[in-house]
Image 1 (cartoon, helix red, strand yellow):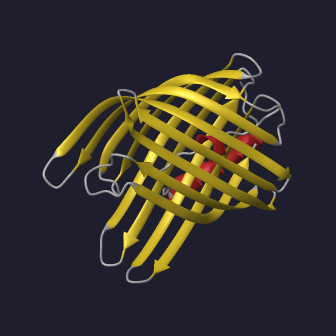
Image 2 (image 1 turned 60 degrees about the vertical axis):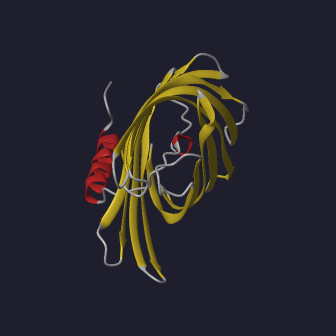
Length: 258
């Protein structure tokens, strides 16, 4: 397959920005990165978020998300990478990041089969490494391209290395990964996207995680938008001394190409 020259230029710009600003948020909302396409083509985006908080302490944060998608109508390939960096006044930098690859195979207009691989780390939550591999069906609940709703029911294997004050902890578990997502485009310049994941441990259902992300973007100029995102995370059994609930609100800009 021959890649058009203007696509190569966009890819070069994205690569330069990615390695220059290598920083982003921990939770991966894959639904916010999927893109509806009417033909076989590449698409993608890169976003940059900055934050500065001053109260009893100073907190500076910078984050970056990068994704690249190829869709040939029968199959969809999605690569996502993000990194988040924060600095507390007088303390060292703390960061988290993740890389995610997902494949979708179209079975019918309603059903797709999907599989994914993910690796991540999170110093804030004392997670040295978490590796995930999963698969399952994805159901399309609506027919409109402007108002889309989906339900996913996946099973995944999880390997996790974490640390406490006295020891390192290693976990190997099977979890469910169910999600409901929506993507709404009330006008050509506004996008509202949300996803909620529920991930219980299959042999201990009271051990579960919930993560929810909602974002609103407003187009500034062609291919450039302003993005506001809220992320909520709950872990019934987190690493020791880590709070069960975490949340984050970010504002930034996102550049897209197709």
